[in-house]
Length: 109
Picture 1 (cartoon, rainbow, N blue to C red):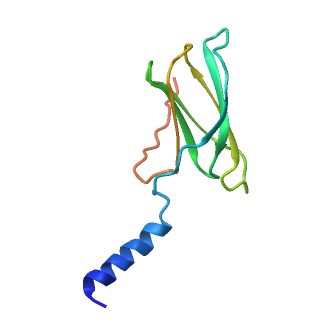
Picture 2: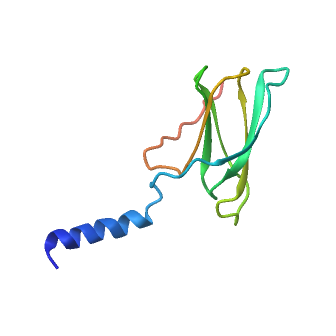
Picture 3: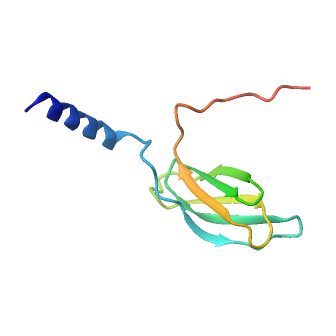
């Protein structure tokens, strides 16, 4: 086997084991109308261990949540609440944690 073929085989093998491969969108099972406070509830199913992001494309406000369930494969229940008006477009996606994230701590007063 030639060197380029070996390198390509190695890349393909490692690509199959990484969790950075784009996930399909989560399942959205229900979306409520805005309540008296202008909040909508979005519910659905995601992959175990994934985070779910919901972005209101009109206001550019969003929420990130995850499922508390375990051992549920790709049927883990999630719920998010987000401020939205009637007819606002919401974008919903799921992702796994990445090494490029940064954790910061809120200071005390």
